[in-house]
Length: 163
Image (tube, rainbow, N blue to C red):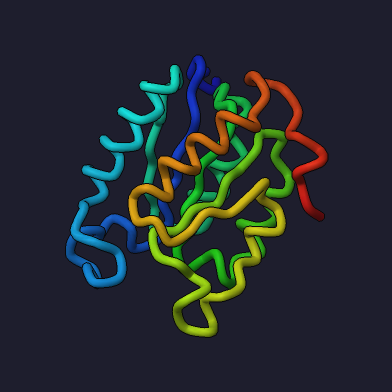
């Protein structure tokens, strides 16, 4: 049976984000994943919500978490798919198939980086995308999500969802 999490948002980190703080600090900064998670959790609490943070290097596990979010009572998802954002149709389809809103976030400005990073297949299924603000991208994602998300079990905002 799925565990319900009252007034909570799910924060998902994709592949290689477990290496934050040591992986390309000039691009991703020196904050570790644990520090980013604490920052996000404190920010969500200051907004009257609870952030549950999870990280996986495995596409299928991320799909499972996205699909289970509504059943577990999450009101929405802040999602950094990492490099999978550029080619994972499985993640794009998972985001499109759930009734909770998803805000895609990236630490770096993906549009100012290598050409192959400019396009996110996930973005078209998300309610929005925020990138380039370091860990602040997650905080802006929390604020955006809390401003657009329905109560648990509710429907996604139809006007904001793209095909």
